[in-house]
Image (tube, rainbow, N blue to C red; front, side, top):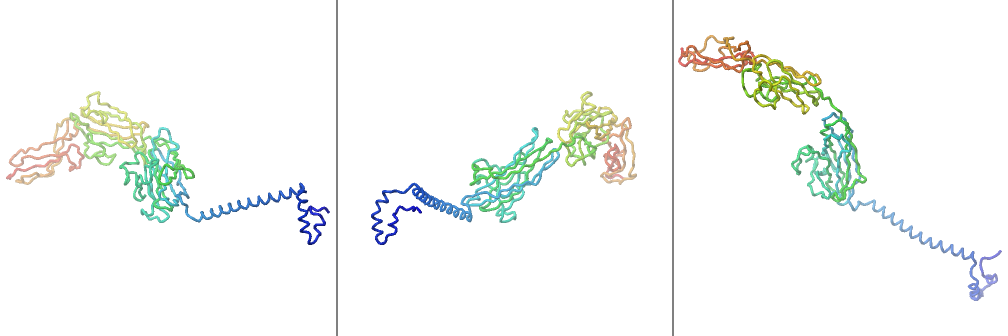
Length: 491
């Protein structure tokens, strides 16, 4: 068997002299170097030693990093972060045109780390889709808030909120307000400009943690109002994290967002039988009388056809209605007078129209749903009656009113005698003595007249007065109740 060693067989078998022999053979070994196989074995052994040392140091480095990482997990971060960030919405909505839709958003985030009370989150709502012609707006406000420390509506347990941040503005640039103090209504809020934000829309707000290392929960009311065009509206609500109290570092990376879809349905604009036609005396507004649909109690059933007053005899107020809780009726209507009456708009000159300027028929537009549209009624100057009828463009009858225009008074007759005797020497009026009826040449009752009382015996009764009242159970029908004043010292 061949040996791999280069020592001579006799040297390995020697005794004490081996050391000397080996020293003597040293030069021989050096003169005969290792074979190729021997060199390969030696080289491989050397490489393994080097690799072992390298791997050893790498293992030390990895172990140190892992230990450092485990140590960091057990302590609070040195910088502020926003985490556990969620945003949810209750549901999509369907409304009629002109109505207001409301969504409830729930927003939660944790502010942790040193200085996390200077971080903030901005919530923004923008239209992702809406009909081109729509002028609808969105409005975002806070309805409830609390922190992990408590839900008792106190400033200590509530995040703070601001409107109107601009890029680069710090969290202290606008005084934050707790939710229980502000943003719950559409009117101006404490600490902010005296502006009705609901009128122009408010589409964003910023949540500022009240303290570091806190969990902040907010509930928002998101409204779509003024949806004046039927169609689909989509509102995208997204959030931004603002680091260190500044918006220059705002980011949407990793922050939640939701989409709110509102379907706005077209509404019926045609009038129904719920529509009203209300008469007011002269040029009075509808609000000056009794309930809508009931003619004014001061309205006479007849008007002086010979008068040249500069005011209309009556005004008819028409209000189209759909019969729904929200009135969408908005179509034109035609009003027609037959008989002795002319019609003008309420914007016409306040003078009795001459023939040709007053018309028998008017077609009126309704500029705004649920509005009152007025038409003035004038006598033609000839005694007689007039019937006025209004009809919507869809054919719906809106109402009919009848007027009687009397001529000059020609007859006064006693219709009721309440008292046969009155007290002498009273020196004051004795009320409700007689009732008289005043009529014109055609027998029509004359209203707005003032009958006079003249005593045939001035020593007994000097004078009196008459008024067209309801004391005789009439309704201003030309019947006047009169009082008589006896003369002092009369017997």
